Image (tube, rainbow, N blue to C red):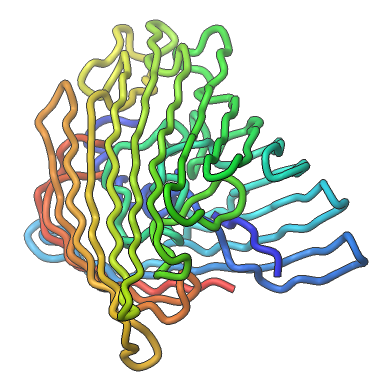
Length: 388
């Protein structure tokens, strides 16, 4: 079957309050093939869907402020459509409904001109090339709460794209074990972008051992041992003139990320996975350095951040699935505020790879998607994920 990818600032107080919702709606990953209908020898259509839902309890998160919150949320409900019109021309159209936010949004709308392994061209609304956790999306991450770091502009609420996507063009391909994706996008619109400058983005990765198997330039944070031994080093960057500040006072943004994925399939059938990432952002205007004159600011994180995750997938089945405990440590270090950190300890119950799994996790700390310190709290969640 055809594999396709069905993979998002305000003031500091509202940023911290909205971090949970934004991180749940972030980028998506390579998705199950769904149902494919062959029209003839070269044309076909595929339909699929994905769902993530969770119960979450946060220390002092109740309206009273001194009791645990208790919330059930459908975090993502996605519909996936793809097809082939010609041997070298395909399309992708995906939607996402964030139930706590209301409307159904267009996730992807891509015209795909795919000529060879080494050279392909996509035009439309798509993922901007970025670091691994942004390219995974919520469905293809190793951990349930991977969005506790500052993210690139297209994941900042809509002024520069949403859900990690933006309108633009991407060239991508592979040569041997080297993979690349480079693109130009609208980036931030309005605010400080007086000259309508484009955002430029790229990702380059080298697979030292077995090649990762994802559609196009997308990524996953684990293959549950299905690809054998994997060791991949990735470098991503984004930059845009006029990408920060306000209409009255404009500033620039640039950032880069180095990420590493190591997965070792042991002779026993168990799998050891290690994922790590270092991120460095340079923004002229941030939450702590607002431009003069008011009128609203598209402000971004300035500083660096890192995380490390280690997981172990047991070889033997427990019931219908396998157990995969993990631990994740993240630290955010803004240049204009105090550091923040968070530790997540979790357990995946893997039934059918990324297409069916349960997750239990406990986290403690003050790191969140803004990159700036939030409330230092403990939280627990139980999540369910499926795709078809």
